[in-house]
Length: 317
Image (cartoon, rainbow, N blue to C red; front, side, top):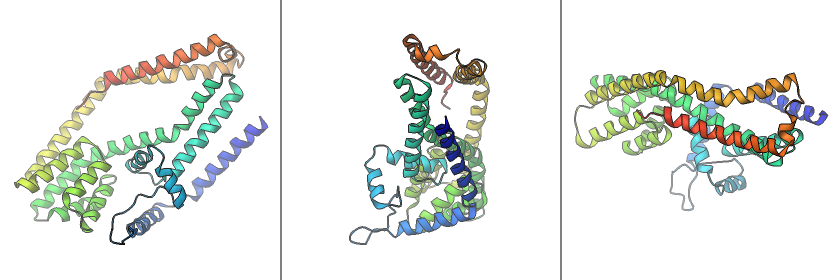
């Protein structure tokens, strides 16, 4: 218990230290800009390329090692889509450390090694879950702000501005995360990247249906001609109708989502409450072989129930 208390206090101390030492928003923006400039100077052996190489770690040998790990590119894309400034090596190290710590603490309480490993893996997945949740929140904000950006683009085109100037206007005047992504797209065009490639990169960073609609509308107008301002007006109308329909579906499926959350939280909440009242009441559940089998069965049935409820309420718009 003394060792466990020491580890908990040590982790809390590091978290408090990281919180007070984290850079400000201005310092983060300046560092990101300087990092982009430094990465853009990386060249191949003949020194002719200007393509930016994705950096997973500031240490070269660690960077090469992480590149050999399956899923490192997907993790890097997930970090970018969530809007975080983390590096891939930091996320991997934090995940491994949390998994080992969770397994060690669970092994002190639970006699089953298999269940301790499962708990350790669940704790180690916490950084990934946080990134996924942050990404969905950021994408939801993007979807709610994008129609305003499209209206601004249409008004700018009617005023006589070029497409590149309109993109810059959206990047400077629309709130984040839309402004951040449009600024990145305008910077790519300013460096000589064609509009088609810049739009494809935007869709890759924000893989949402509304962004695909916008990219399709702009690229089709560029190839076939037509009134782009009128096309953008209709695109904004479609986006708002989709948002309205998604809101209605969330109301209709609220009961199913609440049921899913209750099924996920209730067993663990009851376990915690009963343990607080009588800590020895549930010990046979972890010491008896039949209790271990019941835990495994319950977890499997819980996962099946969550997947079934998700399948029912997941309605494509």
